Image 1 (cartoon, rainbow, N blue to C red):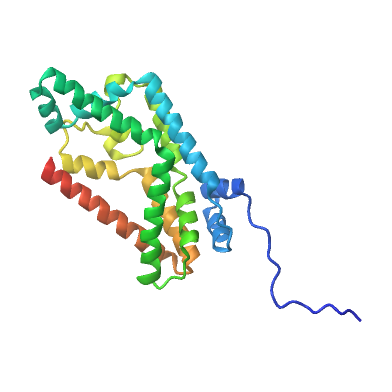
Image 2 (spheres, rainbow, N blue to C red; image 1 turned 135 degrees about the horizontal axis):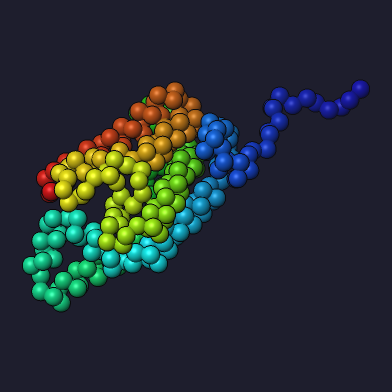
Length: 252
């Protein structure tokens, strides 16, 4: 007779590999989020991929467009900024353009830090929302991992943006809509109402793709209905978009 006492606990199965979770995010996202919900919460690969593709876009802009040109293009598409620039003395004008240029360059150079901070803030807000508003049971590390994977489609936008930067005329490159993934990318910022342009820019297919994944993953780790995950994510997204559109309407 065997002395082995049968265990009442099911054997833990090994989780997906990091690469499997990344690929499944695009082809079978429910598998990725189920794996995270099971306790496999590593997130280093999506973080690394987003940072790498951000630097790829940065390199394409640096080589083919030039950040001084990007700064001038950005200010030219903003009527008030262009007016201030036109009224400024030559030496002051150069300082304004340089400051704009260095700010945009710095944001790209600090991409890994920006990605981490953004993900921390998003995860914190959604963790609180899904647990306290929708009675979820998510842990913060699981929501943080979900957020990292959910934003993987941003690498598609970065790749398209790099292609646009490589082939576009430098004076036409618009950093606000650097890839043809939103309605705003097909509108002229100079000739379009500021609030309409802000809304059109927010209607971005990759952003909506990320929101769908985020809602799906949030529901999985919180063990709530998927509709609750979507409500939490798209509720905050809609609020942020409305605030941005309202500000553009007032300032524009």
